[in-house]
Image (cartoon, rainbow, N blue to C red; front, top):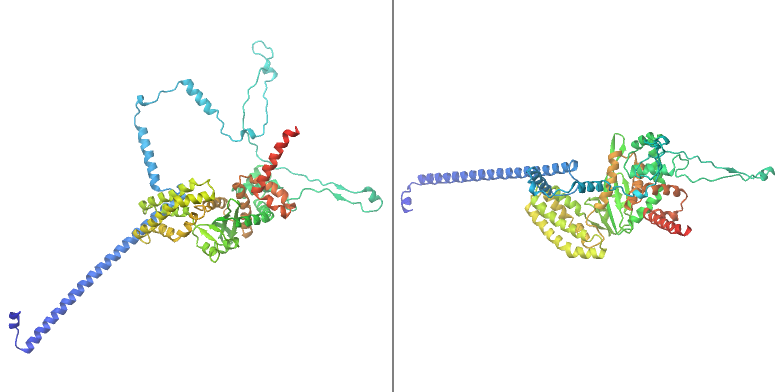
Amino acid sequence: MSVALSNLPEDKEALQAMVRALLLECDQQKQRIAEQEQRTETQAQRAREQQQRGDDLYLENLRLQVELGRLKKWYYGPRADRLQSEGDLAQLLLSFAEAMDRKPVNPADLPPRPEPEEELRRVKRRKGRRRVQDFENLPVTTQVHELSGEERACPCCGVKRKEIGQEESWQIEYFPGHFERIHHVRKKYACVDCESNGDNPRIETAAKPEAAIDKGLAGPGLLSYIVTSKFNDYLPLYRLEDIFARQGFEISRATQSVWCGDVGDLAEPLYELMGDQVRASHVVATDDTIMPMLRTGHCAKARMWVYVGDEAHPYNVFDFTLSRGRDGPKYFLKDYNQVLLADAYGGYDGVVAGNVIVRAGCWAHLRRKVIDAEKAAPVIAQEAIVMVRALYAVEKQGRNASIEERLSLRQEQSAPVLAELHERFFDWKEQLLPKHPMAEAVNYALGHWEELNVFLSDGAVPIDNNVSEREMKRIVLNRKNSLFVGNPRGGRTAAILASLTSTCRRHDVDPQLYLTQLLVNLPVMRIADLPNWLPDRWKAAQKTRLAALQNQGPQSS
């Protein structure tokens, strides 16, 4: 430093010039450093943008793969929610079996072949096994087949052969339904003496059974057949029109539609009573689907809702609304204050807000979301589904238990699984990018965790909402075949008649027989007798009546 100071010029101007040169060099150095830092920051920013772009493309690719897998499953795959890895394992086993089948077989490894007579007897015994249920309950028509007089002559000596026995066999035949005209003749009566005396002849006409449709041509059996075919067997009316034409009497689909509306109007009081019964349930399961309604130029996306009552109130009630707004379920569930089992549709938040309704969640929906995102995160999906299956294993174990026993079983076995699964969801949320397909399933679970845990504190609440989803299949099948309803009244009719046929199926009741008797009695029924015609009570009354007739049979003989 002393040498450098000794070399400094003595001249003031020269010294200032040297300082200015040093300062300029220092500024240039700082500028170069700043430019370098700016270039480094720009490169880092570009790297971050490229990384973000790569992450976005990766997530978009995962999303498209998940969406493609969901659509392929919807159109071509099984409806059951199963992991794809399990299907791959089954395919591997199948390939292994095919490979083993192609290998040559050592004759020494084969089991001893049975004797021909034993094998023939086994085949005959299997072939003669009946696979038709209720065979003995079918009505019997006996056809006797005999030889003619010429055929009875002995081909050897010509003497007439005598009957020595018979062979019997059975055959099941089907005879299509047919139409009949019922001619009602109402006799009129008058008093001849009164008329001869110039008094009122007291004319009176014999009564006939009340018609389900006032002055209508269709009888109760025909009406019940049309309603059952459309709302229980999912046959559109134009197909029924063709079926009727083949049987000799054509009924236009427009006429059939009017008749269905008339039956719906007649059965509406019973439908309202079923709705009151469902609202008295401790747990009501609900779901909805699109029910297109015809409008000028396009179909409106109306909705069909289902409300499934519990075991104490075993009725399935459908409700038609013009939109998916919360006003529909809010109006139907008026004054209801217990447990509503539903999916994660946000409209139910407005239904339960401000009242004491407890909203329960559906584990089947969560499982489906995890399985749909399996391709994006197979390890997480496998681990999550294993724990969800543990919950369902507990439900299977307590299926036939009482409510108290099922609740105790859940708290003992399901609660630890839920606690572990909750922690794993938080761990997975930290591992996954926010827009990752599996992150959507994880956020769904964490966002509805309170609703998903309701079944843990109430033994009467199912673990999922599958019961109402199964009932919605009848609406989907009817929609697939009939496409749409014509107007709001048609949607209301569909809701009423679907409620009756669905509840009949729930109680294993023949809907055509039930509707026939209902339409015979409804026109003259008192309001006080209406509860006796709820499908479950009607079935119980039929069983009691049949048992009484069976008990009276031997005594009368």
